[in-house]
Amino acid sequence: MAHHSTLLSQMLSLIPRHVFHKLESRHKTGRSSRQLGFKEQFTVMAFLHLTARRSLRDGLRCLQSIKNRLYHLGLRNVARSTLADANKVRPVAFFRDLFSEMYTLCRPHAPGHSFRFKSKLFSLDSTTVSLCLSLFPWASFRSNKGGIKIHTLLDHDGLIPAFATVTDAKTNDCRLAKTLDLPGGSIVVFDRGYNDYQWFRALGEKGVFFVTRLKKNAVYKLLKRRPVSTKNGLTSDHIIEVSHKGSGLTLRRIGYRDPETNHRYELLTNHFQLAAQTIADIYKARWNIELFFKEIKQNLRIKSFVGHSENGALIQIYTALTLYLLLAWQKFLCRIGFSVQQLSQLIQPNLLGNLSLAELLAPPRRKIDDYPLFKHLPLFAWPDSSDKSW
Image 1 (cartoon, helix red, strand yellow):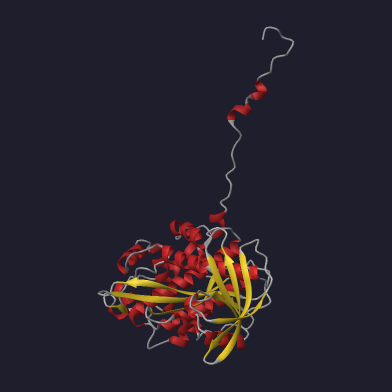
Image 2 (cartoon, rainbow, N blue to C red):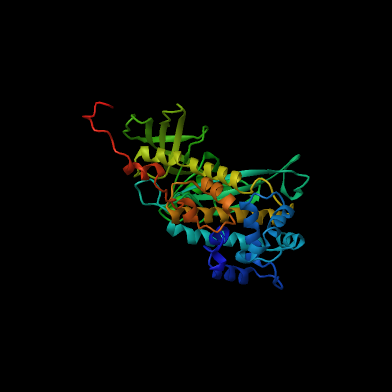
């Protein structure tokens, strides 16, 4: 079990070897390196993420300090120039496909969402990562600012990313959303930045339901008022018709006022069977994708990069997303109540330890010997209550 003697190697062993072989044969370009293949490159980048190294030099110096354990990670001594060249020229598609394969492996182990309906539930959103324009000229966003955008589809079964792609910060969210192939019968929730009636019509024709917010300047015609209980913040439930390029589109508008913040929302959906309160709860669950972005930015290297090339930055992002799935999978297997963030914080100082994750989460109890005083108690006799000298 040499390849499973460290916690890091145990985590990476969740990815079958045949997955690396399949993807390497698909994206192989030229002669393969004997010292740094695709698998070895991913291992080194994963080590940089989990140990929060600031640069390639910093991370490789740490790896050189543990030469006696490199064998357990399937590594040899890695030169900085070799890794830098690999990050610069290796196809990003390998790491993007590895992320997709990892989601396929992790999905069967994920618990279901908290709602009663059985339909798949997704959240769609994007986050912008600001970059220094002088260091990353390829990420031009504004005249004095650079940035990239990570578009993510979050699966509420386990709260894991089902799809992710990286574009320049200028890319319109709705234009990219139209390229998604969502399964029929699923429900996707997003904010009002994705409002596009043509896309809404296309989703309905595919049997996909959506929940979003109505734009403030939306023009519509009221068709029907539905009865609604106002106990939990609901204010209205209407059937409306919006006009787009001369044709009408029938949708459902739900008014909701949050009891905690007193903020009023106007929700829009094409699902007419679910209760109005369930629709409101679905939109509130969209906040989970904001928490996901917060977790990967705080615990993985998403906001700063170990190289300045576009290729290297994309490799680093897809490696981070794959690691998030690995951490989530470990969480599902151990059946613990920790968040991925808490699990990452626990693993980081024990990454090269010999304990398994199960032993780390539930350390064996130490047997405590009887207190020495109790061993001598039989030598003493308690005084008789009839003895008046006491």
